[in-house]
Amino acid sequence: MVRVTTSPRAAVTSEFTEAVTRYHTQLARFAYRLCGDATRAEDAVAEAYARVWPRWRRGQVDDLYPYLRQAVVHQIYGGHRRRLLERREAERRRPDPVATGFERQVDDRAQLWAALARLSPPHRAVVVLRLVEDLSEEEAATMLGIAPGTVKSRLSRALDHLRRLVEVDDV
Image (cartoon, rainbow, N blue to C red):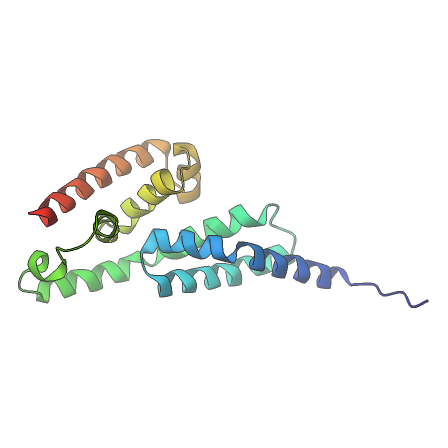
């Protein structure tokens, strides 16, 4: 009888691979909701895997899925400054951003996602975590590394901004 043993390293690798297979679709959908761009979402999830893997291998991660989710939030949320500057520059060059940047013949869901994409990344993250992912204020605050009161105020401001965007675009 041949006895096959797997090394602890192989077992850790196998567990991580299985988790990636099991959670990839959920993480990609979550990332898309945060950023509104499929390519950026996939990149963020891939980068989250790469960043979490060394910690997982060293045994520093107890619950992999929440840890991966938080890593995805940090990937999406962390790169917003450069994109914000790029967006401002693009809007500055456009003669009339409202008239040229929005198609008026869309259904309500598409209009809402378009308005959501126009929010700042911190506001969009709070809206997605609280209203789409249905996390509590405390869970969202923990995930974003901010106080629960900050979650409340950002959500309030984000919803006010969404209302204004939808009203402006409806006219």
